[in-house]
Length: 52
Image (cartoon, rainbow, N blue to C red; front, side, top):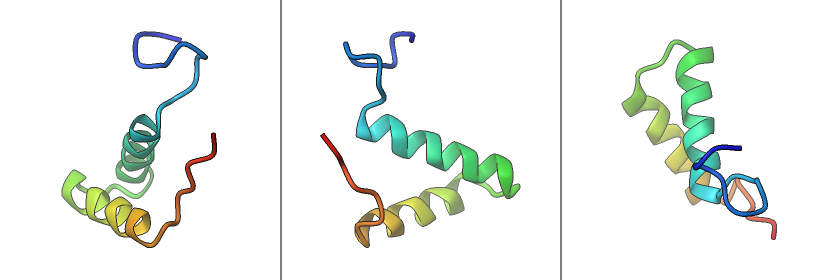
């Protein structure tokens, strides 16, 4: 992977959230601000688990 990955070649938690936001904007033809709000609400509700 490129410079956006850690030494193990996996995404960081923040990169994962950014990717989810990007997918929401693309799949649902949604503006960035709305997609970010959705991801932030999901994160606040502990929808995303940080497995290590």
